[in-house]
Image (cartoon, rainbow, N blue to C red; front, side, top):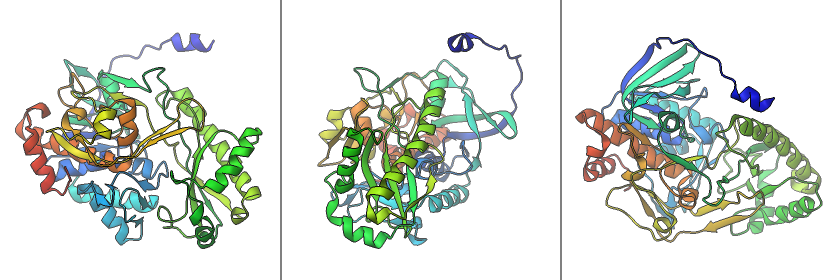
Length: 446
């Protein structure tokens, strides 16, 4: 019956869709990449509309409770600047960020991120539409005509000269017909999903002292992991990762509270049934892990669950096939193509898609360049990609998927879109050198 229901269709009568906004650049997705793209485009002189499905901006940093702005540096040297670094400075000034001396992972406060994103967008003159969901992207001959959205005002069209897809899952590109792929080459399986949760009622100063020498090379708490491995082998705990329990360096912005990254669920976040199942399973697992911590870790005996993310954390869905495809070799060898518009430096971090707790981690010795060509999906004339779904293979994606790198690609995409709009040309007519100069003038590191 389920397959029969899926095969049925309902005829919708043709109708005229009102245009809710016309602007030079339309950015879809208000996460780190989308905010950087919208702000950069507006500062470059474009009129900008930014559509976001939640009631706040920030994406995984807010809705997903991912508190680490990773990819900001490598080996003690900062490799991401521009809008991303401005956000960090604003957060730090209001007590909403802790800057790791190595720069790579900067702890951020999700509520502070919401406010700073609002301020950055407002000051740049971006028109923000919240609670706005992309439903279609009609295109002809590789040119998007509009993005159709649904929100409290109903169904409407956002019309732009250039479009930036920063939805994370590539919803605009997929609906417009841009080519994409998913998962690892051999079987299409994706990196697992994670429900991040926050626990409170914790003496974080005591936890600091007790756990400082218990951190494994990949940052999980080795003492707790040993206990969890034994319980999992006995069937008392579901599959887990890490656990990464942020206690210091990456997490002390809220005394008495810890953020836990342990849940591991297989699924495809572009499939409604799979995503719904993962959300519910993730919340159930968060409670299971909390009870285990209370019973087995004396320092957490009084802890309680104070929050789960508004949505499950997503590592990988669609990856769009661009004019260039970033490869694992590009990443590990630190290659910098002539049209480099952003830098990456986060380790290649592959959490096993095979339904086990494995993790493959390749640390990098030098930054690599992300080319403009990787932001341009093949066959699309007025669409750019920003964030984790840019053109890369499965392994390269496992490095560039983090939020700091996403903001760098977002600034590049937004700036390129604005420059193209001002000249009345496609982005492929913009010279990489002119884009790189503008990005450098705006504080980006290329």
